[in-house]
Figure 1 (cartoon, rainbow, N blue to C red):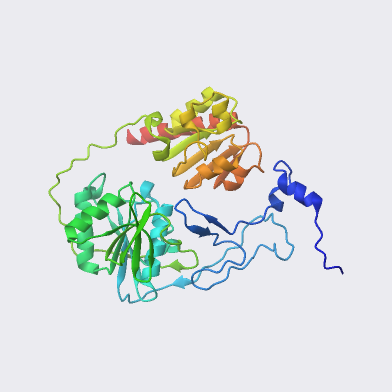
Figure 2 (cartoon, rainbow, N blue to C red):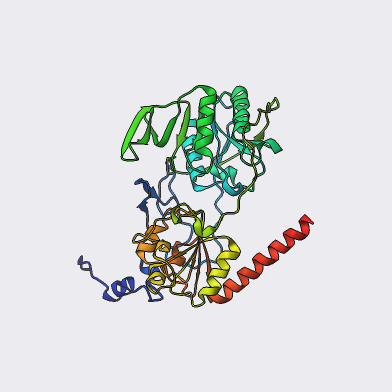
Length: 406
């Protein structure tokens, strides 16, 4: 046979045509990409990926053997169990747990703790109040300590510092890791450092060779210093744990937490107009595009959900939304925890603007559009019918909550 590499013009045309039904099948699998902080992210679920433990991913889908990519169910892979019967030391992590669940920032932090713990240490997660998380084991938690009580509810940084000091006295962790975030971890970490009389390493994005490397000079410079005991880490500080499952054994404090004299009174949550929240700071964004035909219904749905409204460039150019609501590389880069895209096909500029969003939900008629590929949850159907059903579901949920409260 000839060694000449022959081209397939039809396959190349399909790869360029996003409207073709086989367009997705012609796209190469993305193995790595650059994250918002400039770090190269790798796909741990990609074929042939070699993780930090030297384990190589195996393709069980049959794709390498010519099997069909459409499968009814994914193969269940039992990850190896990582056990630490008698920990030589502890690495304590205090996740933000926004909404009662681990965020991507929290998982990066647990990945960094797993690196510092090695084989002899154990990762101890300290959680305040009730939570909804059920995946501590796969996130890298060896020991789980839940501090419950009315004194820890709401905004109570002084009481939480007292709880962390009790944990410090009992377990004497080698390192404390907290997320350097605006959702509570940054403030709590600095208060805790002041209580311990220690100088923390802040905005740390890498720990390597006994050095903590953090951002400085308005994020334009890196500051390296020896690894300290208290680390406030930024997002993408390490790869999340993906190759092992852990015990997540519950532990308790041997002594009760002393109540601190509260100098801060929490008056509860204050109702805020979602439209007044800057797009770059919004946690829940409900965004519309060219596929939205009933804009009054779109606004009604956003109000029912209590979400901040956004839009694609097409919707802004057509005059349906203001220019300051445009999401994307040509508009505003957003970092929402939940981003709902209604009738947005997913231009490259828009996908760049939502690259740092945690969970993306797509509502679209086209199952092959780029937004559907990016989304964590996709709903295929007419947007008007879906929005009406969503409003009805929210109203029913709130009515049930009122009846339960009564």
